[in-house]
Image 1 (cartoon, rainbow, N blue to C red):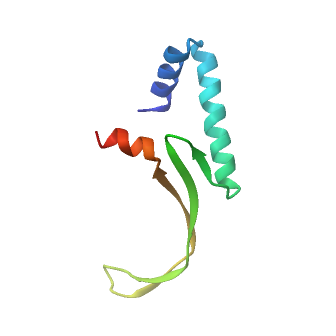
Image 2 (tube, rainbow, N blue to C red; image 1 turned 30 degrees about the horizontal axis):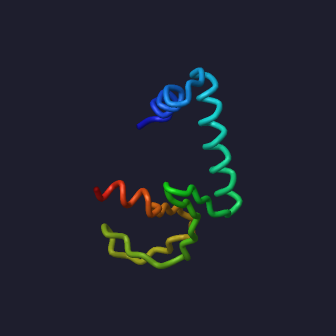
Length: 91
């Protein structure tokens, strides 16, 4: 599902105009993005939780040259499905 498809579904289910639904979806995505950028965990009850996890720097091996290389520390986004979502997916 793309963002525009999500906007269409929100507009249909809420009775909002498409422009208002787009504003609502964009505001929601922006709020989640800002919270994650600040290092906060975002929990949506019945759906799941988003969390930023840090990966430490480590040494890896280049598969082509077989030489060791340093992989820098990074952050990644983690999603864990909530209990209700898991139940729905496993019907």
